[in-house]
Image 1 (tube, each protein chain N blue to C red):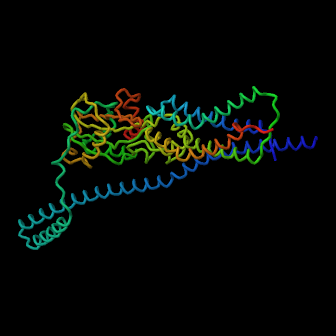
Image 2 (cartoon, helix red, strand yellow; image 1 turned 180 degrees about the vertical axis):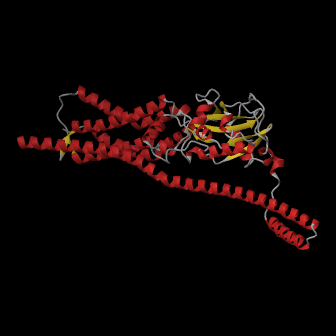
Image 3 (cartoon, one colour; image 1 turned 90 degrees about the vertical axis):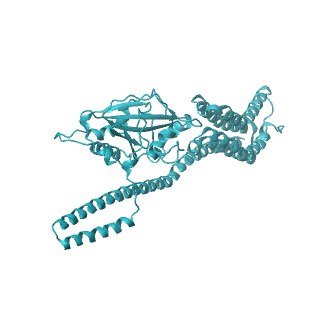
Length: 144
Length: 321
């Protein structure tokens, strides 16, 4: 069973932009309140690479789609869309938990930074999976 | 054709439901984790409460042993006096009986571990006291008896001790000051408004992660603002000498040491002094603020006055009774 490519892209983009936006504002407010002290830059260095590559890619593809409007409607396999949506959801959930769980486990800002850096161990593979599956929608040459 | 369009619309509806479900799942995961962490804290809390109870029991044991020792000494003096009276009265059996009892008491005392007399080792509180965050002179009416009978420093100590116990300050230490004493409470963690934190956080030397008692307000606060810790030590100084404060900045570590170097009870040598009109009881509050990864610093220009500190900790209320 197939779905329209543009609809899949929109749904994935909504998921990514909504969750990333929420997490961005959480860390932004934390920065305003000097939550991380001298380690603020290190936290942003951790957060931005977890979100920005994917968001930039999505936005770029949407711009291209707008420019090339009028092209033929493309189709994509429904199973593949659901798989991508699932992997993205899991990845974003883990990123969110990494930030939201901090008040329960850590007090010192230095330890928070270490915790964020260590989270690359489990976020890295998940990000790889999410990026690979999203590539089919946002990078792959679309079939008519 | 129309049927096909209808099917496509149905599929899209289902897909939207899937997206919504995933978003709901995401929210549920976050909320569940927050709640689970809150529940997991109960075991730690129970353990801390057990430890606190044990500590209290041990303190009571020490106090009981001390009173038993004093009682034995008093009995020995009585037996000796009886023996002397019996000798004067030529009552041989009375002398024998007194000596027998004294021998039994000696055996008992030998079996107990002897401790040096505390009166000879009263540690002195820094004088004049180091600069405090806030000060409050407690009205003498709180201590005077309505009958107007004479009172002693041990009575004052008893009143302050009772008020502190009622507010949960079970650990206190005593120091000597000129013609009086200083009573130091254990360093506690407080809220910015001066109220004490709930145990066991109250007695922790560092701010703890949010795992003991979950509250959404506390979670939001901890999520967005730095985990600042506020600490307080209260020193009651009872002396007849007016005093100023030395221009010395005390560290949190030094203030914490006060609890380990002081005496556990007020020595009789000080307790038997009469509380005359010249005497006053002054509460010195040493408040510290600690930002994570930095050394704690004493707050000199704190927003709370000494009176507010005493009121928020409920000590004022119990002293007033």
